[in-house]
Every structure is written in structure tokens, then in C-alpha cells.
Length: 301
Image 1 (cartoon, rainbow, N blue to C red):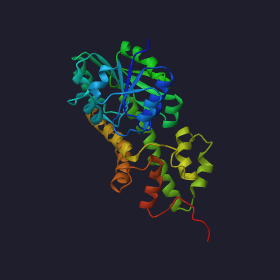
Image 2 (cartoon, one colour):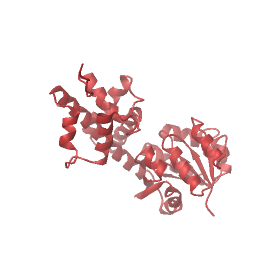
Image 3 (tube, one colour):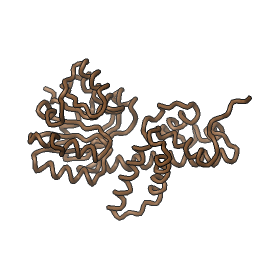
Image 4 (cartoon, one colour):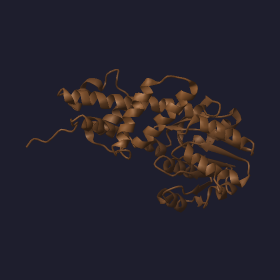
């Protein structure tokens, strides 16, 4: 018999993940964190609803969290009506992008209560979440990861055990550092090109299909060239949050990360100029605009 699954965080990623769980026969209970839209659809399809994280525990063996970051996770777990307040043995799978130091501290605190926390952050996009083809990086004890794996495979094409608790969130930060680094480089390169009279189309004609090409590049440039707002549905404010986590991790580890600092500053500039809710590829327009150029062709009069 399949274990009973609870889910909190039915946003752009979580909604697709929860839908896969329900369609593949996992008993599902949801708890609304922000919006009811996805929850109502899932309830209509057969999920049940809990009115609080504490109530969710009574109906579940495993709870999946897919929220913004460590602050939200800690509130949902440690709050007065949180998951830990139920005092019941439980497996919590944190699919958020959280700070590794918070994850390891929270896992140790919960272990004393008989609750196991593992980190299982995600890679890829809401499209793959809906298709059940996400990549998942899992940090935690081998027995807990083995127990979680069938659940994760309901919405993931690839599940990689990265090591002990916290290592999944560490790997996720490194993954996002590389991808946000690409975004910052693309944006600055496009701005330099535009200043010199080279259009994004010319830039793409050289890079696309070369050794510099990759799936991330293609998605980023789907926005740059085709103005596809949904090419990469990841908010600039969340990118800044992740790069701030990376800076905290590097400081704690005693590692100089000047490139990480530069990438973070690029996203901080975008947020402080009022663009935090835009998706990451829009960084290209923001950097260009701050330098007095445009990446959008102006129609001939």
C-alpha cells in the first residue's frame, strides 16, 4: 500500500508535482500556503484538504514542502500550528531551495522529536514538473532516501542521492550559481554587443549550435529573441535569494567567491530597480536599459 502524502506549496512547480502524485495513485492531502487555485483543482480531482500543517500530519506519513526558502520552511515546521507541533513521527521532504545551514540545523532539531527531514531540491521548470520529468538532488540518510525515492519518482525523471542531509540544498545552490551566472554573462554580453551595433540575432547566430550552446541558453534566448515570457519561469527575486544563500554558504565555508558576488550584485540591481517579479531572462532587458540600449528591434517607420 502506498504511503499517504501531504503537500504544502502548490505554486508553479508544486502544482505539477502534486498532480503527478495524485494521478499515479498516491493518497494526497494538501494544505494551502498562498493560493487556492491549484488546491481547488486537486481537491476536485480527488485530493483531500487539511486546514493547517499540524492537521496535515494526522492524515499523512510523508509531507512534501515546495515553498520559497528556509524562512518559509521553518515557519511551516516550527510554528505554533506547524508540522512539528503534532508530535508525530514523520518524514519531511523539503523540495524548496533552502539554506544548507538551516536545513542541517532543522534536521538535527527534528530528529530529537522522531521526525526525519531530508532535502530534495529541484532542477528544470514547471513544464517538466507537470510532465513528471524533474531532476531531484536528495540529501539525507540512505534509508530515508530509499523510502522517499518512489514518491520522488512520481514527478522526477532523475533522482540523485548527493550525500548527507544538506548536501542536496548545497548542490542546488551550485546548480543555480552556474545558471544565474550564465544569465548575468548573457545579459552583459548582449548589452556590450548592442552598444557596438551587434543585435541579439547576430549574437545568437554565432553562439547557437556552437560549443557555447546548451539547453539553458536556448530557453534564455527564447525570451531574448521571441519575447516568450514563459521561457524560464523563475523570478529574479528568487534568483537573488539563492545567490544570497550562496554568499552565506561561502562565508561559512571560508571560501572567497568573487564571481558569485558579482552575479548576486547583478540580480540585486534588478530587484532594487523594481524588477524582482520579472523572470530571469528579463535581466537582459534590465541591464541593457540601465546602459541606455535596447535589445528589441524597433519597427521601421
